[in-house]
Image (cartoon, rainbow, N blue to C red; front, top):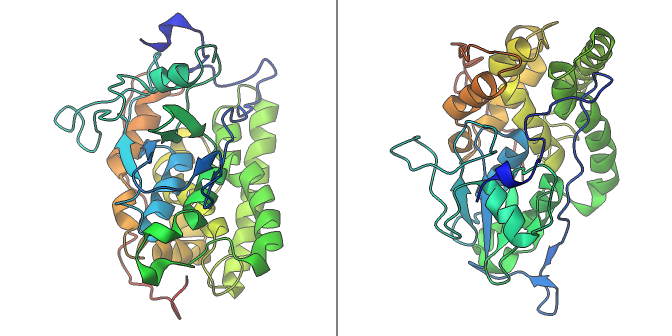
Length: 326
């Protein structure tokens, strides 16, 4: 089964007015640490489907790693190339870093959506959080998946990681506020800039993006992390965009007023600090990232030539947290 049976608009990147508008996620159920919940937290019941290339899926991989959930929630990784049939699975020999789907035996992510809802007709996106018991999708909304991973599975992880939260009670209001403008102008802003099909749309979104980067630079000139000395989900959500910025968004998406590596020293320091946290580096697959963007968006890059640069060196210099940040 492939997406050819239904038109998901998988490669339609902009609206008639030239603006890119992101699809609202369709599956929005919640896993809870309660035995009577619709989807109760259980070890080895749920499975993540991700792309290393996708910044939204990357969020979930980082939280899964930092919370020590590798033995609680399995993961499958799609091929970096997004074609007319959507995300496909591939063997590691075919595409290093990718996996076959050993849970459902699917060839394409689309098959999971249609298995969960045969009438589904929207885009087939990642991440997907799958329930192996109910054979359905719990959620395809990354912002909600990371909050589930943040707290719902604490009973199944090592004792020293229980209670660690990237959405602490005393910072929830501030996290929600900063997430809102960073999502609109930066996380989604790079897409609104890169997929713009009209000059005015491009100009407006590009300027808004860099205004927000200047605002973030000023925040990080004073703070170790976005909201002070603690690493929160706001940092993790922004990190997956920033780590892609110089190698992809600056050139491929024409977000080219400045680069992170040369124009934003405080954002660069912050990026290195997060990248160097135990486990984060291994969630960053720059080959998948660059090949996805440069080879999948043929309306932007029809010859599929992949740029050489991986962006600034994030391994050096070493940036040590002033204290344990989480």
